[in-house]
Image (tube, rainbow, N blue to C red; front, side, top):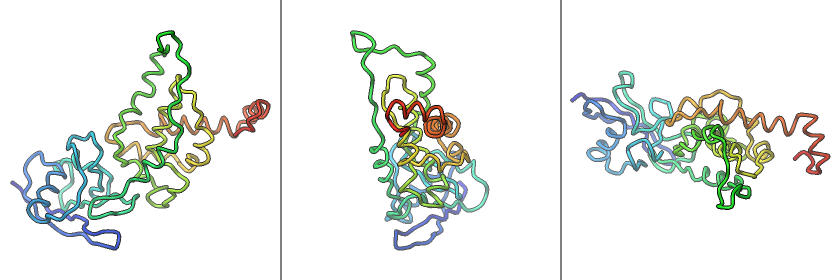
Length: 249
């Protein structure tokens, strides 16, 4: 077994520092294996959040060598030689060690208009739906709410605009609803105003870190931005909205 150096952030909201640990690792180890070994043998009071260890619960999100990743899906063999740094996500308040408070994300999600289905097409309560519509939003439902996309987004990470910007995860959630032909909810005005989609400048960093491979920028954010622009800034569409009496939102 080889020995690898880990620099792990230890501390809380009042402050902290990186502490160094030497860990004997075996072939096939992931970062979470090493963290568990440190926790068991060298730092029994280390706080770390995890659950499934299979890349499906989204609990063990952290920053590994400065990149937001899941600890359970980051193989040590794939990392460059040298010390491995492990620190908590920077876009959310630190609780302790590697654990952050991500509750803000659930509050934002709860504020988005929920699925509002139209009346069924058939007497048995079912709807007709084209296969294209089924497949278009399928990838959005793969989200495991790890919030890595939120953590890497510079609007939240660097500018802390949590009060006016929902972030990539919630645009994926909104896209899943908006692109559902059965849904009658209208979230365009909320996306423009309360959810602040206009602040996104299409860097695609959120797509890069998504462990489920969701094409967040191209398939969710850009189509939503187009809806906002069509509704809010297209002169003809605005005139139609005014005629209909909704003031163009």
